[in-house]
Image 1 (cartoon, rainbow over the protein chains, first blue to last red):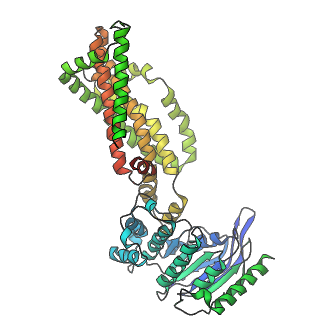
Image 2: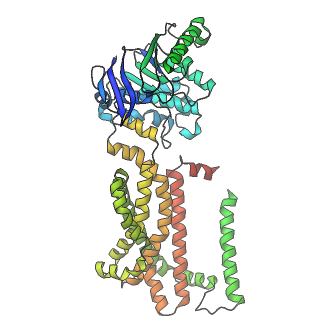
Image 3: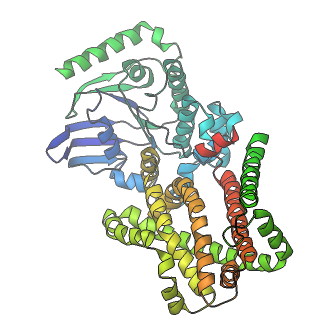
Length: 254
Length: 254
């Protein structure tokens, strides 16, 4: 549905180079995790791809168009690190937020009110439609954020360490839920994380980034079965892939 | 629950009782201080006069306050968007706030003539700085994740304003409205006493003071107190409905 092409992208703030010439491409419907140490410019890359920030040099194309175009047509759905729910909106209203804003640009295939409700039921929030965010746990809030993004029906989903603030148990639940929600839907995903096991469990491909300025130092294909079983961690292949990614990360740090 | 209603009533009754006792025991001359029982019984005897005067005063205060709120929101939105404008206007607003407005009331009356206009002008003017400061800071203190999210779907300035900034500013605007309510009533009363008309509690009070009618004067004072408390009560109820999502109201309910 959406192909992402980045060619020789650089980003500098004053004298500070945040992204070194970086080249990558993501195939349509592919789930790619970008893994790297904190502060390596991952978020900057995500913001550039989402059209929230211009590149200093290089070309970026989202489905053959500049990211700003994709943003204007609501073809990029974002899940930020903090859920960013509006405290005065109920769960249902929060899930509808991205649809409500800039209505003129809603894609034809976007979700209707019924679809949003169905999605909320699917993530286990069926009994909380009229609840306010402060009454929800962190994991539940992040589920609303997930539905809010998916409801947009955008072909490109960008996620910025969305599970980083959650506890271990909730995090593995969210991992399974995300796999379940995006598998077979043809959505292209860029998922930023600094958790090796999360990257391996979720993606088709893991890109390992160096410390700032950001470069891709390894590109590892994850050949684990789809749909991913929830006990994917127990597979010997999972352990091997995690080791590969870890070694690549260490090499990149040197 | 019962404590929250009973305690304030007990507090007020004890205060009035001590006051009454003080006046009687020390035999304070009526001209210096009235016993509350006398002022209140005078107020009751002439209740229709005071009620129609209070209605005028309420209109001045409420309409003036509403004008100040609307202008404060418009100016606040501008200042929140432009630090230069904010710095440029801060001294002027502060000047309005600290200048002794009762000292120049007669000039305002001369400029606007007698009747309603000078009262509305004065109320709006004295309430404007606090509303503007509140609107500016309230609109600026928005959750960065929420702002980023709205930008990710290319929300317009207006949408960011009414979907995010305005609701974010609501709690501080309510706090300011309470503070301004007292100011609005004081300004109404003062202008009504100075605008050569016989409308409003201020006019009643002024006439009473001129004729050394202590009971009539203190009845006006008590009528003002009732307006003040009534307004605060209404604001609290409104706040509980509008801000039921906000942390201040959550604590109040528990």
